[in-house]
Image (cartoon, rainbow, N blue to C red; front, side, top):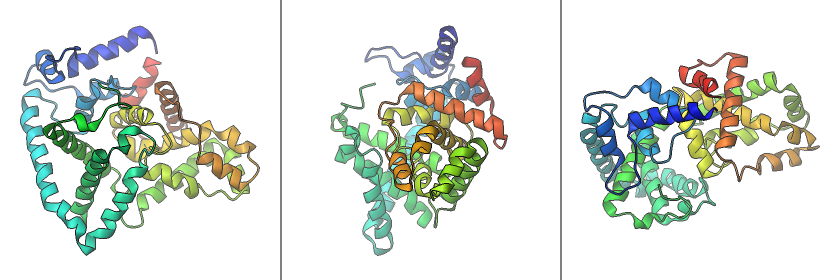
Length: 333
């Protein structure tokens, strides 16, 4: 991307989301109020375009809340609406979370209890019990309804006040709810959404990398054996946390980022390792590589390449509705 075009994109984001200054007295919300009239709505199409390539760390929390539809685009409505939603979440917790000890809910809570530590097991922030407990509440409350800029590496959640932590948890719940609504069939009985996405991935590879497809077939590698996890966990277990966050900037900027674009990202991800996979001469070697892909040091550059290749697959196959946000990627590159 050209430097002047990148700066133009950042300038637009600052205008929409507020120019954040590095002082305690100047917050993003204050800046947003200054830069945008209280009754003027943010241009969502422009916001998606400018967020597709990644969001500055200081702007990401507010940008994600707006992209998720949790926070209103009009500043004057934002404080009241978000306050109501945060209070509503804690009413949900009060009502639903106590059900985890009841017999009909115990299996569901146990699965959540087992799965939460697996999300990013090596990242320090996910080793903190207070973080795991937040996710246990959020995921159980969400599931139960349907049954009826500090460095993350060193940040300690225990530093947050009780009020701050409750705010973060409520905001996260509503953003995660938005995410899961679009892929809900991934997590219903027998997980039909995941099986369909795995089949879609298989078809994309059969068209775009026939040699790899045949190599898998020759050695008895079933796509479900490795890509079920990719669909179930949205590649979170394959990528470092910062790379996942950067990838989600793009997903949230696409209208069907998590439900459809993710499949093409998985195809692009698999194609990256095509030659190495084809050099493996047996089933065991292929599976060991697929379960231990060398992505530990991935960052923005690798995610940009990954999403660009995913978009090129969409253009080649032509089965995905191409959005202005994704088309704009190539005007930046």
